[in-house]
Image (cartoon, rainbow, N blue to C red):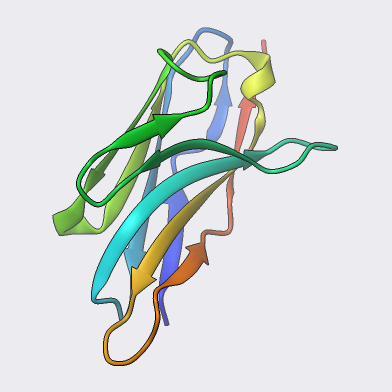
Length: 121
């Protein structure tokens, strides 16, 4: 019933910028931490950036100073602003959220279906 939908992926030239969005919808009461993860072919999925409910952020070393994660709690949406993109940033980017759906349900991890980001000239 809860789903995450990413948008904003696509093809961009090296040095370009892209903004990813992820909106949570469905039967949810509150969203705790949210984050962006990525997986390139032949590599493990890695954390790119995370943001707590209160706005504290963490970034992978490879994207620090280039990417910025933010969230709009009123819209249940998390964003990833990606600047100075490099070919090595090419991957499928997944949105993650830890969500409490109400009642006696526990907090659960939810994942979006992923959005492709390709950085190439």
